[in-house]
Image 1 (spheres, rainbow, N blue to C red):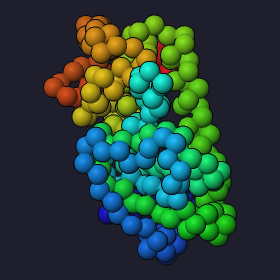
Image 2: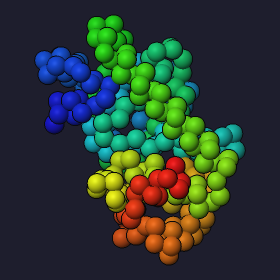
Image 3: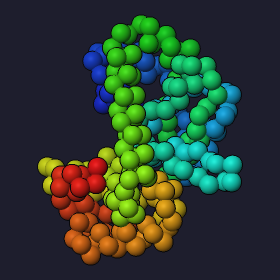
Length: 226
């Protein structure tokens, strides 16, 4: 399963199966239960690179008054921990499992050696980091320019990236995060998230089935709220 995972990670795009097997031998597997702290903000221990094999994590920061802001949610195939390895500084955010999660870890020294050994990896890394910057820009737009429904709808689009999109017509978001986590992503309250979701349901944009949301017209929804 882990080799199949590496094949589908954009960071390792263009590498041969033999090269991927060599990388896999350098990794170790770790498991975390739901709501386990994986990385702590300002942690000076910054020598591990993480690849999510199974599960989901939230990347967040906490203000001095204890308010959490979720920067992003990452799922299977995503990675984190590269910044501290690259710049040698402390961790910049908390990473907490929101489901039972399994990660592959790579020693920081081995990660840097891979960057030097395979020219494709730095190129792929830059592309992924650029994509994350665009995502951060979208979040700033969402929090500063959109109303509550727009912020919640945009949050659903972010979550849909890890769901199943069927021919660009519908998108399924399974195992929704808690209302509190969604509120922390959208920069609003739990009650506001609940009301916004109900309004989107009544308008016919989405369907809610237990702990799953289906975006009925994904491409149109994305045009409206991306």
